[in-house]
Amino acid sequence: MSVFSDARTVPAGSTIETDLVIIGGGPAGITLALALAEKPIRILMLESGGTSFDDKTQALYDGTETGVHYTPLNATRQRYLGGGTNHWGGWCRPLDKGDFEKRSWVPHSGWPFARTELDRYYPRAASLVEAGPFDFDSNSKPWIDQFGAPLKLGAGGVYTSWFQFSKMRGSELPTNFGERYADDLKRLPHLTTMLHANVTNIALAQDANSVDHLDVATLTGRKFAVKAKHVVLATGGIENVRLLLASNGVMKQGIGNGNDLVGRFFMDNPIPRQTAKLVVFNGNLAPYYTDNQNGGGAIFRATLAPTDAFKRTSHVMGSLTTVENKVDLDDFGNAAVAATASALGVDASNAQAYALGCGMELKPEPDRRLTLTGERDALGMPRLRLHMSIGDEDFALYRQTMKELGRQLLVARTGMIHLDRSARESWLETLDWGNHHVGTTRMHNDPKQGVVDADLKVHGIGNLFVAGSSTFPTCGASNPTMNLLAVTLRLADHLKRVFS
Amino acid sequence: MSKGWKDSVARRPLLAAIGALVGIGVAGGALYEASGVLGIGRKSGAYEDLLAGLQDREDAAKVGQAVLTGDPHFHTGHAARALRVRIGKKTLSEVLAQDAVQGRIVETQGWVLPEAFTQLCALAAEAS
Ligand SMILES: Cc1cc2nc3c(=O)[nH]c(=O)nc-3n(C[C@H](O)[C@H](O)[C@H](O)COP(=O)(O)OP(=O)(O)OC[C@H]3O[C@@H](n4cnc5c(N)ncnc54)[C@H](O)[C@@H]3O)c2cc1C
Image (tube, rainbow over all chains, first blue to last red; front, side):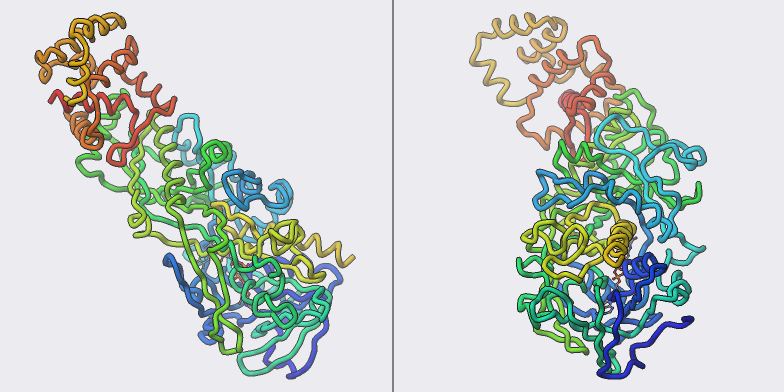
């Protein structure tokens, strides 16, 4: 097949039969389709949008937000082929080993498998986002020879780690999955990608143990059904919830929601700006701290991260601090730097201050949640409301990590830290969000604590799986996309076994 | 100079207090302290032995002013005694690095600083 199929041309009232349906053509759906397409499995990927932005389709994402300010629900996502990668930033970093562990100080933490389970999928995930070689934490990198050593820190809880970036072509945006993989999607013989196909209902069999069929609608008013042996829901961390809750024909509380978990535990990475100032006494900071650099086949940037050991002993959450831009200090700051450096026996006549920013990890919180409202979209589906929150403790824990960084700089006599924010209002002033939608169909082996099991199968439903970061029980501080691709590749392996 | 210091001195015989200070083996410092207790030359030179380690005294005094404002109960005399014990024969930079290694850090107007340094700064502010 050399073109995409178009739902607007499917005969109304007809039923399409296939082996596997993937709902959603974002990076998760596309990755799954590509990973399975060499197998003799008939796959149909249903994508709501076309190949470019369309107002009416995007309006299907309208919703409401309450609580702490959050990106409007129709702006935090993109509803056409490629999904969020039509406007993402391309920041990539694997989750830490500790992110997968049960952390005594983080209620509801603990994945059903360890990070080692994903190790074999990460290199492929990195290549799909077109990052460089999968090496994020060793300091034996070619770019260190090229650009100079990382900032010297005393022994302690914060270390220099690395982001890599999805490939940017000149000034263009990072890898856009819809464009980048369009030819592959069209070429694969067992795969059909159908555009303008909105799944509006996942219809369960009467015994509620399996999906019977999907109802599909187009904005031109056409309706038809799709029947498949297995279904993977990959519509993103917000829309996955909407489809599960709205599909309440057989299970009144929604699919997979017998324990009232669907939509709860919403997480994102808060991104406060100007959290602190870093002063480097000798003024020398390798350029990879402040700007993306090219080297060793990767686009990369340094970040200051707490070690798993520090998180464990200090009960802090994950965070990834970036050095943003040079700043001037006020008189008091200049005095503090001059006096401290001289007392430490260090020359600070060339000292330079930088503003820091960060991405933080939130604790899973059941009341930070998505629910359906009485409002309906153009296809008759109930809209969503997001209740967003962030606790004072979240800021306080990040501050603790920054204080540790300050301590380590003093130990090494290389610099100092100024903590810019303490009151909640001050943190909220510059607070942005990563637009990372995590946790709303959480993975747990116990159906009372999770919506999907370790194979991403919805508890109690034999043939329905969920892909994407909604399945992550905790979010870590790392950006989700490369991680959700690794988890999706693992799902692909599982489905290969299911179909063989 | 804080009120608490005078109160505590008043509760004990003055000579015993001086004797105790000498007894901890930091005789030079204790004499400075004693002169402080006795109200002799407190401003001009009470902590000179300690402040001599500060090369940038003017800036340190600015930091110290913030330390004193942020902690109205800051006890200069206690701080000076403790510092003399801590510094002993070490250099100031060694003591500050040791503070950082051992996690003895404090926040002054948002700056993360070694504890001993902030105490010295407060003495510098007192003395200025
Ligand atoms: C501004 C911004 C910047 C970002 N930057 C980064 C970054 O730097 N690094 C990072 O890791 N992540 C980043 N992200 C997050 C990233 O975009 C998501 O993690 C990723 O897109 C999620 O992939 P997904 O396939 O699970 O869902 P999505 O990308 O949301 O894809 C879901 C797909 O399903 C389709 N769909 C929805 N509903 C239906 C339906 N009912 N029927 C059929 N199809 C449907 C949608 O049209 C869409 O194509 C960013 C996001 C935003 C908004």
